[in-house]
Length: 246
Image (cartoon, rainbow, N blue to C red; front, top):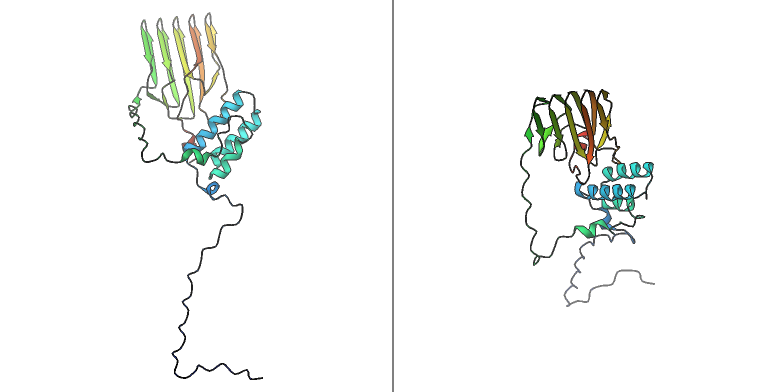
């Protein structure tokens, strides 16, 4: 048997060589959800955290379950890590990535929200002697605040304040006067004051969010009073959690 290569017939041009086809990209493995691997933003993590807070308030999650899921939400890097955290809750919005698609070009963009005014820098000490002193609105509150009321009244409203510290200690001295403190409903509030022929009333609460700021009221009321409580319907939207995480 002749195994020699076939000879090209004389008088005929050589057959053209076929061009090699470009290499094709490998197809994704069956069942791979590429959208689940997209990176999540801070706004996506906050949205899941809000759903978990509502579920905890409704009694759908225990304290341990809520704390575990909140921590997982803030540590999540992708949509695939966020979605299972609310999948068993009635308020689960479906795949989060589907809610983040940009509107069609013909849809008018929402009107830009007006920028918030800069927070005011205020003294860490408030004094009211035979008069009154009040602090409210958008102001910066640090780690320590002192309120002195002598035959007068001091009002401290933290519901729109900008918290610059994870813990705010308010030291109260009320002599024949009064100090009133209002805090957002989603922060922790603790008190350790004393009333001498007066009242020291702090309506304590613990926020379900372990990263929420803590406001501590301490001091003394002599023939006077101190009252501190949350203001319903007012929630703090921004705090130092991201700074704490580095």
